[in-house]
Length: 316
Ligand SMILES: [Zn+2]
Image (spheres, rainbow, N blue to C red):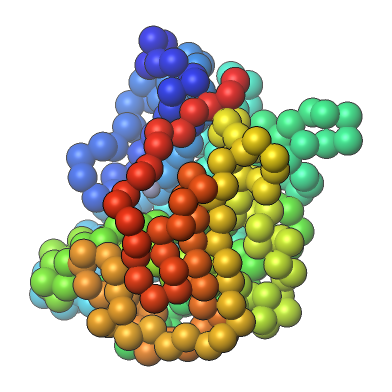
């Protein structure tokens, strides 16, 4: 990590809790070293694995191996696990003065740990510890497991309606700095397995902006805030070079939004996984066109041209 060029990577993601794949980092000395030495911001997935393992064992003892269902996910991957892990990340960051960004905050409880305020203060000082939440935590809650089951199984888990409301308010109050997604396009076949075998994660990219803009239609926030939290803030936080703003000389990564309703149908899903947790949902806006690096790639009804992505650069 010491040899990582900060201009080539936005940051280092540390799985402080085990999620999909074998990427857990839980050795205290290793964690301490990462927070001390990282040449880029540290970005964390915060769920305490021993807490989850203990709760999972309790649920298995009570309901049996085959008695576990998706509706138990927010209790097995509990709020306590999130809070404990986020507290640890913040304490390590304070100890070493690390620039820390905590990903996918899912509980109201964690919000009290973060500072309210803009990313850059009037005197030019930048927030050292920042927070992110995701659109699925703002559009789904515990009541949706009955209908969607493993299709909304993700880590951290989607929790209660009260968490959802607190997270929306935290974006408005500038306690949470970024609104993002967790695009994990597992197949229908994988998601239709029993709770314990079904992988965590859901495909969100295609409808993420529309899900965020629903908050504007609901008068929970204005469109400028959606732009700040989804475009400006990530560019600011990670020093992304020449992107994230409509500015002369910047790359034109643009989206045109039409306020014409759109009902999500499975046949319209562009992700190769071929499904969306938003199937049947009617959004009050739709994407009229998308430009990447100044080239139109979506014309409102189909993808056009050949992929022309470019590696991001970090101006730091
Ligand atoms: Zn994660």
